[in-house]
Length: 77
Image (cartoon, rainbow, N blue to C red):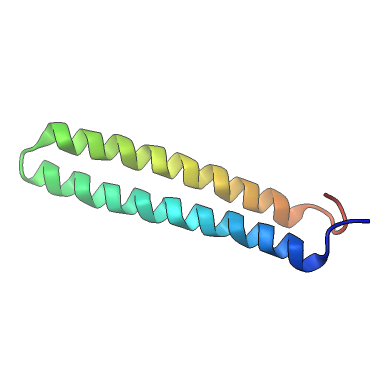
């Protein structure tokens, strides 16, 4: 017997939520990097750029997990 449908939806929504959170963190870090580069603070800008890339990679992983869960046949866990 598989998980109730609402349980699967909750797990799927959690994956989407986590992906969205990391995309927002990446966007914030990109904005911070741009601001620092604009102020000629390239070292801090590079640090924010690196952080943005890390957040974007995590967001992509969560997006892939959400996608895999969404295409998994019903009743499979």
